[in-house]
Amino acid sequence: MCRHIAYLGPAVTLGEILLSPPHSLVRQSWEPRRQKYGTVNADGFGVGWYADGDPVPGRYRRRGPVWGDETFADLARVVRSTALLAAVRDATEAGADGEAAAAPFAADRLLFSHNGAVRGWPGSLAPPAAALPPAALLTLAARSDSALIWALVRHRIAMGDAVPQAVADTVGDIAAAAPGSRLNLLLTDGSTIVGTAWGDSLWYLRAPGRRTVVASEPYDDDSRWQEVPDRTLLVATSTDILLTPLKEPTA
Image 1 (cartoon, rainbow, N blue to C red):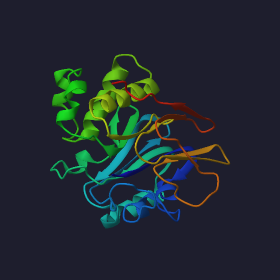
Image 2 (cartoon, rainbow, N blue to C red):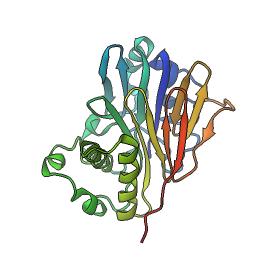
Image 3 (cartoon, helix red, strand yellow):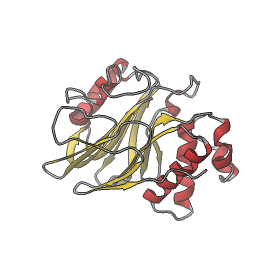
Image 4 (tube, one colour):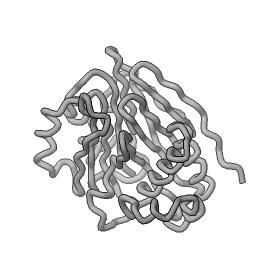
């Protein structure tokens, strides 16, 4: 269910990360190599990136498959950034939200994506959702499990949690309410990447020149790619990777 990727490092064109590699995210939209659930990611796509001097990212999102968007290749060829987050979507359920349901979601300087599915959605998320103020539920970006997960993460951040703690605790709450859910989350503020491996694949690459890539699957066959163990929280900068085991919810 979806593929996503985040990059930190020297300024590159979007295409260098998303189009040029032999097994790029764009190719993964129709030919993923390590996707456990689903085979084609054609229900929307998006990319968010950061421009010099502006902490709030820009986004480009569409409801259809990335290979059918003639504008994206031009955009990816000329836009440069030191940080980005992008995703191609295989929807958990068909819906009418269009590009509003396509990651990355955004709030202030944060970009967010969810690869996976909440088991028993939507009823299974009633207990975690009860913690949200009504305004948060009324202003969900889309009627999807991913949009509600993002609202839960944002709520914890607004209550004072650091981003990694907010992400870890949200995964724990959802896993307790909906056992068997797949909760690979990916979030960046332009200087740090926070991700979880919970039920699907997640990989990272630290390359020369202070480059860090975190992705659902490797975009090439570089031997430096490392798989993140399942049930793990990842916090990455352009120079460091920290992996922390996530606790299984107690019965």
